[in-house]
Length: 305
Image 1 (cartoon, rainbow, N blue to C red):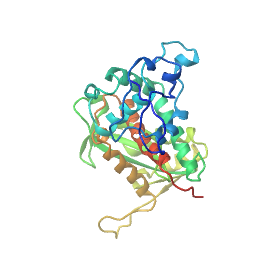
Image 2: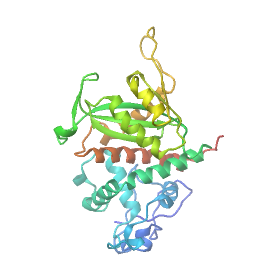
Image 3: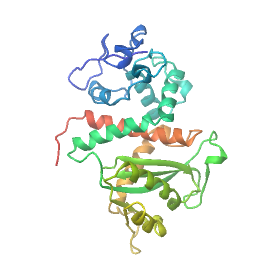
Image 4: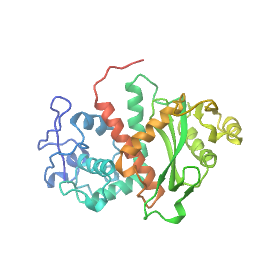
């Protein structure tokens, strides 16, 4: 069901009978009713104004076949945001959103074609530029997080992390110095950090050619340091914890990625791994970060050099 809006003071979510999404302008979304926003995860007008130019263009609008969409793009995005933030099942989608199977079809299509990551990366570039940074980062931080897996997760993609005593999956992430996600890979929890880092750092280095320095903890020592320097042209700097430290201590640079993990755990869909496929689990992480970044873009704040 379409959701249509006009700006009311930059932060309101008021709705009128007009919408500037592509499904309303060129598709069949106008044939359905108008959805009124009512949840905290619904995009404000300021968020929608920042998001709309960054959305991928549908294939049917580029002459690649398919029927014009019948549901508002803004309503579809709000439905996915609601599911990710509140941790509901797909079939438990509230009735004022488009039908759950239509929302899931968009989620699956974006996941299979890499559109969720593409949309996320465009938002990250806008956030960095808004803070006076280059769109492409030159430094990052790598770490991993083990989380328990639901019963729907098969034995082929789950394992036991002996260090954290967690039976489930492991999220390997690379973030920039602002704490924004550069890359993520979900594996079984028994996959070692260095093993996953070989693949993840190569993917991140290929996507971000200006990346020169990556900080990591002591679990990434060994041959990985030489591999990054000789193959990927990356300096992998190990931030160690001193032996005389007692209790909780904030370590330089490593706290940045821990802050991202804290944000993910506040997203209820990510407090536990409920996804059958690891690609879906990675997409959920990208969608969680889009919630964070759209709110940052909509927030009026002065630029800093």
